[in-house]
Image 1 (cartoon, one colour):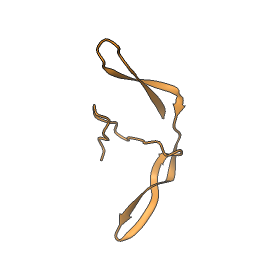
Image 2 (image 1 turned 90 degrees about the vertical axis):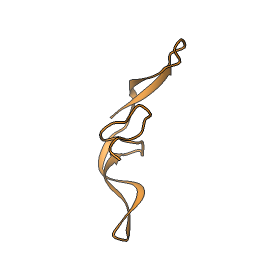
Image 3 (image 1 turned 90 degrees about the horizontal axis):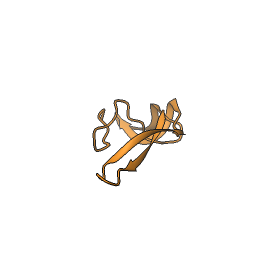
Image 4 (image 1 turned 60 degrees about the vertical axis):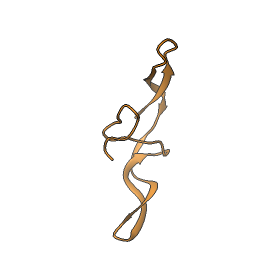
Length: 70
């Protein structure tokens, strides 16, 4: 997954995001992540995610950067 960099337009003060190939995050199956519970059991394994713990948004984000899927 390509990372991104952000820069601000000095005239409009609008923040723009651009793909940054130097800032990659590799995806993997069965990665460790935040703790979650199911039927009283606690798990830390997720079906997929990034190997270095960077956030991954399956369906993208809205204009404020919030995950659309959750």
